Structures are given as C-alpha cells and as structure tokens.
Image (cartoon, rainbow, N blue to C red; front, top):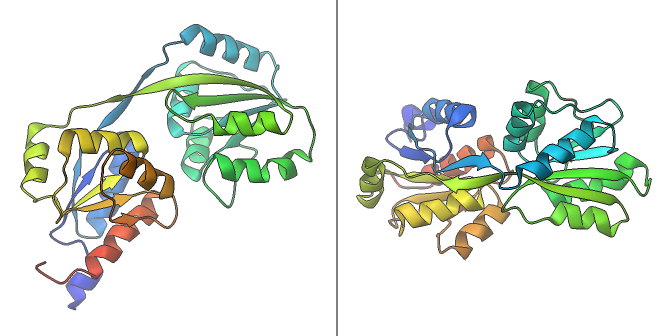
Length: 262
C-alpha cells in the first residue's frame, strides 16, 4: 500500500452524509481529511411538536422549579430548549445521553450534571442513575423526547419509583434529497452512506433503496443497525462507539480491507 493511500484511505470515495447543520459540516470536514468527497444531503429535519401546549406547560413547570432532574436525549432537544428560551433553575439537575447532547447543552449555556460513561443510550443512563442520585426515590423528573423515540427512559425511571413527566419536544420529518444524489446512488458512484438513526435509515431506504451492493452502508450503532434492517436496509458495518469519529473509522476500516479498484 502506498503512503498516499495510507494517509488518505478514502481517496476517491464519495460519501453521503445524511444530516446537515454543524454536525454535517464537521463530519464532512473529517471525511475530507481522510481523502473522501462528502455529499451533505439532509434526509431528515425537525418540526415543532404536535402538542405545543404540553411542552410549554412542562417548560413553565421546569422554570418554576417543579423538577429535581431533566433528561435530554438528543442535540435537537437542546435546539428546542434554546428556541423556547427554557430556563433550568439551579435546583434542577440535567442528565444528557451522549457526548453530542452534552456538548450541545453546554454550548447553549445549560449545565450538565450527568452523562453516562459506558453506553450512549437510555439504558446507559438508567444503569448509572442510582449512583448519581444516591438512590433517592421518588425524584420528580422531566423527560424530553422526540415523537418517534421509544419511551425507554420514562418507563425505566417509573419502574424504579420516580415521578416522571414525559413530553414530546419535536417530531422528525423526511426531507427529499436532490435528484442528482438519487441518480448517483443508483449508478453506484456513491461509495458509502452514513446512517445515523432509525429515521435516517427509513429515508435512505425509501428515497434511495435498494442500495447497490457496491455501496457500503455504515450505521452509527447497534440500535440504528437494527432499525435499518427492520425497514429493509442492508447494513455492512457498525461503528464501535456511537460517535461520528467512530462511524468514519468504520468506513476507513472497510476501505482499507477493500482491494484497490474493487
């Protein structure tokens, strides 16, 4: 293997990045550093919740100090909090699922008291919950989630005796990708597609499927891979950690094991 291909393992690879915004920009930059040509085409977007009054009333209760804890499971929820100018009083602690969510909270000026160290999921948060709260029950908890998220966290917290108010903060809607992207995928000229959530997987399958065998489909974690397969989307590689860096690493690993010209 030449030094050039060693330092730029994705040279000649066109990679579809399915989310725009700051996340998409930073992933595109990381892909370029590996030699790839990223195509940023947002496939999902976020729309206001269908139940705005429930969210407004929960956020009013939050600012009035009615919750001991608030849980946030996505960076999008943070965007909603910021746009609603939600106030988190010093008496309310904040638990974030995942480094991306924690970073978004900090950037928006919110405090973060707990981020699960092991598993970037509701399960991971529940596993570390008791230690973080010293087993105090019942606590008053506000859980904010997307419309399609399974209420694992809410159910888990209720099961251990907490008083939980669960509110939908936003809903996910599909976004049509440009015709040129559809044509390029169909022609096999896109070497890899990044899949970052179940809702992205659904849009990839709906808008671009069936994906050519020669195109690598990379999922950000086992749950996303499971959701992808459930909608009929093939998954070739799964990131070891649920992060953008790990997802790119999985694509690089696949590229390194692919014979040149294959």
